[in-house]
Length: 133
Image (cartoon, rainbow, N blue to C red):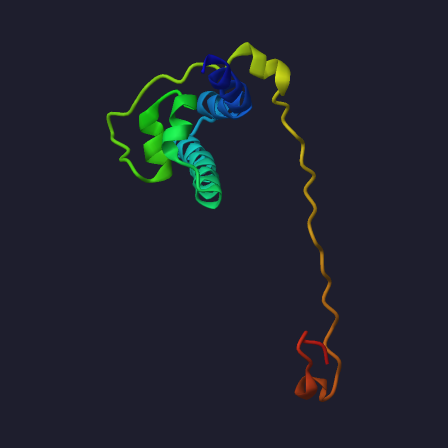
């Protein structure tokens, strides 16, 4: 069972590293929590989708996760309690070698549309769907 947990830890490593980076680098608490909630919500939704579509038994998944309580909370059959606070350590070193987390630069493209001047006369009476005369 230990090798399967190691595989899960290696696969989860980059995501955990990203979440820890957000936790340690974002200065605003509200934005930090919002980003972490979005990450957790998206991951939980994907996990629930796979379980539903593949008809997986949560008891078969439980030996692979670090905390069984998290499994039930994510799959919607348990309850997330305010006392479920714990330290999340850095992912294993093998996860860093497997897939290094490199921030990707995104280019920002802005669409510029220029409006044509309205034609003189009665063109506005016969406009098409796209607003042209």
